[in-house]
Image (cartoon, rainbow, N blue to C red; front, side, top):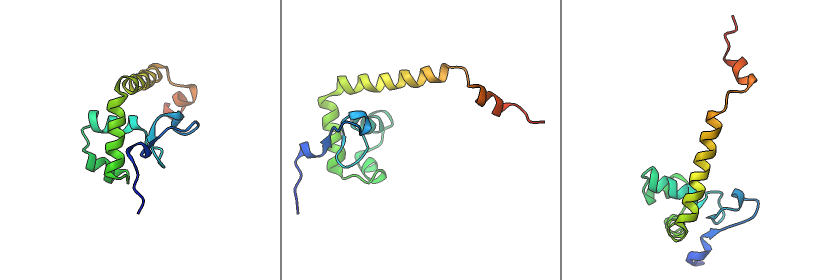
Length: 103
């Protein structure tokens, strides 16, 4: 059996998940796990079960998050601002046409 050290649970790879830190071998980012745990109230066990991760993977992601909290929280806020800006844009002409009655 191979034992993984804490630093082997998290990786950053250009071109995968925009280079954000993520669980090794997965596209699940540390940011995702932080949101699920801190903001949505999911337990470590729930996250591990729901996303087929080990408890060590989830704990490593949370440890990484707490070590880099300012940077990751800034990224979360930027993502929220981007989503809000998209919601504020008027609907596209195609979307408007699709919502018009066809009768």
